[in-house]
Length: 168
Ligand SMILES: [Zn+2]
Image (cartoon, rainbow, N blue to C red):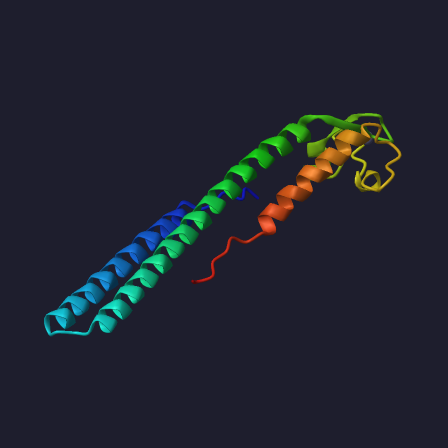
C-alpha cells in the first residue's frame, strides 16, 4: 500500500512539459517567419500589429501552460513526500502499545490491529475487532488509538486520491 509516485509518471510529466515548449517554440518561429514574409511583401501596419498581438498571446499561453505543468509536477512530488512521511508516522504509531487484550491482558500494538487483527498471544488469539469501537473498553491509550486512526485515515485518503491525469 506504498503510494510512491512512479518514476515513469514523473518522467512523463517532465517530457510533456519539454515537448510542449518545443512545439510552441516552433509555432512562434513559423508565425514570425510569416510576419516577416508579409512585411517584405509590403504588408500593412495593421497586419503586423495583429501578428504581434497573436505572438504575444501565444507566448503568454505558453508560459501559463509550462507553469501549470511545473505546478502539477511539484504537486506530485509533494504528494510523494507527504506519503513517505505518513508512512513513517504510521510505522511509528504501529509499534506503540495501544491497549491490552481484554481477555489475557497481553499488550497490543498498532500492528496487531492493522495486520493480524488478533491478540498476539498464541494461547489467546482473541479477535481484536471488539476493541475497534467508538468507546473501546480495553483501550486506555485512547489518544494513541485515535492518532493511529487519524494517520491511517490520512494514508488511505492519500492512496485514494488519484493524481490528475487530464489532458490540457
Ligand atoms: Zn489475548
